[in-house]
Image (spheres, rainbow, N blue to C red):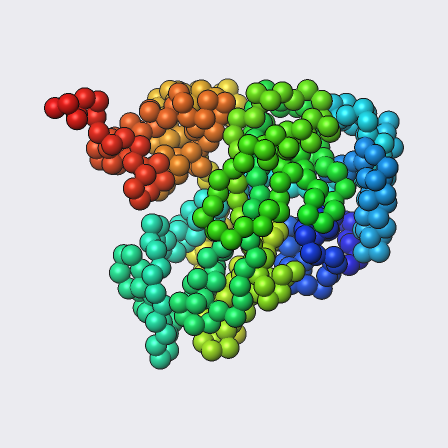
Length: 453
């Protein structure tokens, strides 16, 4: 895959993720996955400007070796890069320590890439796309579960928890549940292999500890990465491919956290056990029909039913995937007309902590709620929380994802009760109806001493 060095490319990021995935041994430059990833990756900077996405950085990545086995793996990775037309820069020990003085003194050598690494807070990206789509006329139904799909002549009836929807076309982009949705329509010719992963988040106290993302050379089922985040936190992940059968099992393991922390301490100095403020678990899926690529196609049985089954990396490719799906819909007869008054811009929620002093004062003068800090860890104001609710947040988790209130050192211990109060006030509902993440996840079941009464 010849690489155009005039523009950023995620080629090495793809290579790294492929090499440390279990059972995957070869990169396929002509695969749909890599074509769409490259296109989406290069389109993102301009999209981030249009959508006012601020939690986004382009950074360098340093793959480091600290022993002879890793030196060998590093050389093998470098040779494969050259075969693909990609040229990472070789670094000696002194060069690495000059760039990253807090990396372990055991480092021997490394490979540097300064173009392929992007770090983003994914929730802001998702909400930005959703808000822009809604502004351009898209109707979005949240809290609406699909329960059945009934093919009819010329279309489908999609039964949901909020009633049936008659539609001519269906795009199945249900992620980890894409197989379930496809089976509802009788068009599932794939299964899923599930891999569980765990990532730890470190305290902002460590902001500036690293300038680059770093990690050891990838190997099947191994590898890992230490990432400085736009928020000032650092994410560490060395548990990425634990087989599981349960899509709902997001439980963590203490031993995984301990192993990740130990591995991180081997690579970076200055990190303490108390710096871990949270741990997250997720499920990676690989389709069984073509584990190394996406399945994005009109189904044979019902050409108006499009399966969009995405394998990682998916976020970088998202916009390119959307364009590809639109083209498929057009090929199946959907009339596609460019919207004459399409508005490509979206303004994000003002972030008091990031504004220059004069702009902050002006904002507070217009709305005093922006001068009332609710989340002290992340410096999130009441004004930001109210604006998030105005844009659609209905739960504590939704406020958290939109504003970062509750993502700091205390993990909502200080601001959580106040967020519940603001939600109840703005939504005009009792405190006991405020939920953590919808459904039956009420934060408060009753008022103090209510049971005594």
